[in-house]
Amino acid sequence: MKIINEIYRDLSSLNFKFENAKPYPHVVLDNFLDKDFFENLEVEKINVNKNKGTNFQTKVEKNKWASKNVELSKNISLIVEELYKIDFIKNLENLSKIRNLFSTNVGNIDLANYHEMYESGFLGTHVDHSSEPKTGLPHVLNIILYLSKGWNKEWGGATMFANKNGTKIEKTIDYVPNRAVIFLHSPFTFHGVTEIKNNKTKRSSIYVDYYCKNKNPYTHLKLNFKNVWFKHPTTFILPSVKDYFPKKNRVYLKKMIKHKIKALLA
Image (cartoon, rainbow, N blue to C red; front, side):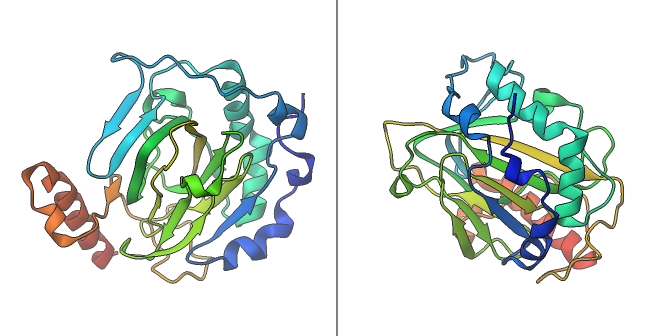
């Protein structure tokens, strides 16, 4: 069974495009999954209850559900397993020139591979966790795959890329069915999701991240920010300074301050 489109068997030819993309290295791959596989793909509603998955209703994440600790459906599992395979990881090395890449083995338990967002949902500007859960080694690449069929870009749900401070959106990548977005992950690659303006179809996506055995993974890249790595938790940037001061948002303030200090010292 073919899962990934054959035209993406070798991504090395896209290295220049990846490295020179702004505001930070990334590449957009349309028709990422094999045509027949995608046409036959049904994105089932995974059973959501209080004991399964994680629901988000906060200042920075709204109307979002992640499949953490949930058994994935057959087809979703097949896609995730394909993205974890050594051959695909080697392909990512050819694309990014980041060597010694590996995928985590924590599965869908500690890090959710499948996400859904609903009407009025959004994901604020943030950088993800910095380290592989078990080894603490650097988190260096992300892939997001859009699964919802018949999606209209006017419904929102685009991926946003921000500047190095997370304060200004510099690029948006529309949600297009069967589109994959591969992008660099560093302490300065802030990103998010635009608000969903559709009450008919959920925004479904697969997310997989990749790690590196080298603690200086970005030195070969010319970036608009420090090409260094340091440990940090998932860190959000709120829309305005005043948003940090309500008691319920102090956790974001603490993480943001710690991130700023580590960035200055790096």
